[in-house]
Length: 238
Image 1 (cartoon, rainbow, N blue to C red):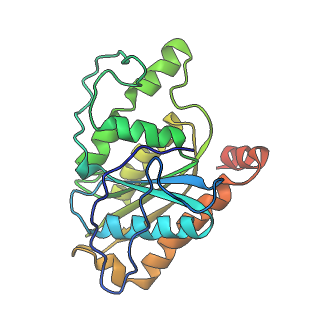
Image 2: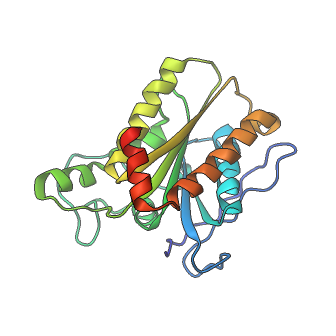
C-alpha cells in the first residue's frame, strides 16, 4: 500500500528513549514489499510531548512485528474545522482542500491506525477533534448514498495521556475515538490510558507506560493480520 509523502518532523525523544520510528512516504523504502501500513495520528500540539513519545513507542512495537510506520502530527497540518457543507469534492472525500488530504490518503491506505491525544477539558485535543469532525463526509456518504469513502478493513487503537487521573474524562475521549473508528470501518483492538504525566516527554521515563504502548502496537499488528472471519467474530464480541 502506498502512503502520501509526509514532511519529516523532528520529534524530541524522551530521556533514555530510543528514536521514533521512521516516517515512510510514497517512494520511501520500507522493509518488505508486503509490510502493512500502520498510521499513527497524534493530536498533541506539543512536539516531543507524552502523546508523541507513547505513540512512537506503539509504532515501534508495530514495526517490530512487520508493520510499516507512518506518524502524522496533526499540529504540522493546516486543518480547517468542518463547515457542514454536506458536499464532497471531486475525487476527494471533502470539498475543502487542506491538510486533511494527507490524513484521508493515509487512513484509506492503512491496515491499522492508532490515535493518540492528550486529555483537554475532559476530551480529545482541539487538533484531534478537528480531524475527526472532518470525517463527517464519510458518515454522510454512507447514510445518504450507501457510498463507502474508506472501504476495506482496518484495526484501530487509542492512546490518551493526562496530567490528572479522571477515568470519566478518558471515557469521554474514548467514546469520540470509537465513533471515528466505526466511521472508517475500523475494528477496535484496544486502548491505553496514561494518567499522571504532565512534563514534556515524562512518559519516556515510565517503563510500565512505554511497555504498555509497545505491546499495544504489537497487538494491533497481530489483530490486523488475522483471518477476516476470526477478526469479525472478535469485533462482534467486543
